[in-house]
Amino acid sequence: MPNFEHRVSFISIYFIFWLILRLPHPDGDLGLPGRVLASVGNHETWDDPNLEGMMTTMPWLTDLGMSPKNRIYARPYHNSHFIFLDSGGMCINEKPWCSKNPVFAKQMAFLELHLKLAQKNGADHVFVVYHKPSFVQYGHDPLPPKQNPHYVLKKYAKFFNILVFNSHAHTTEQYLVDGINYLVIGGSGTEQVFTKAQNPSSSEKELYWQGKPRVQEYNYLRVKVDGRQLNAELHGIRPPNKVSTVNMVQLPASPTSP
Image (cartoon, rainbow, N blue to C red; front, top):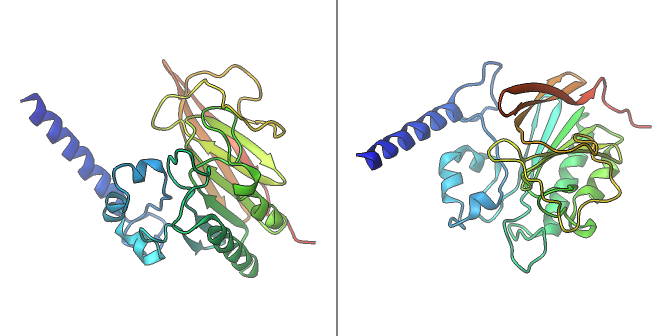
């Protein structure tokens, strides 16, 4: 009987998740049958190298050009441009950015293509998502310079606001590097880690903890866009009962090109 109850609970949770994915957005949608966009990480590839679970749960990603052989896609939406890349999974004895779908150089060409497109279309904001962090102090090592999208992104920081969302490391960190906001949001589904990376980012200032002792926290990030104004709020819960909201990014206007 306990096994049956657990199975029913799992099916109920899956159904609720499936329903939420397909609910229409109150402010209009992306013209797709679902409302959630996602990037590939190691959790999506474990025991599922062809992404059958991810692609069947979010089949609308196919309409955006994503497939098991091409795990990247992009989409403009109003005054914003969204770009999703694939940094690869847990690749032992391989390069940190180890995705072959496509390889790093082709992904950087794709990234630059869409940054140019966003510039041409006069976008105010660009959101870039990939799993492994460009800059981080705790948990996993950051991506090294030669396998880090930052060298492409920094060329476009003067044209629009760029927010990069990373995870992989189970921590919460924030960086402002060359005018680009990097947010490591890894505190939503598991405990914060308190172990420093073997080779942490050293020259970039971490802006969330700011050198203070780290404590346990679960959180999620909510980004609000109102024209050129952008506000990224981190909603956190620190056991046993402390709830907080922190303004991580607040941009009154998009940068203007010279």
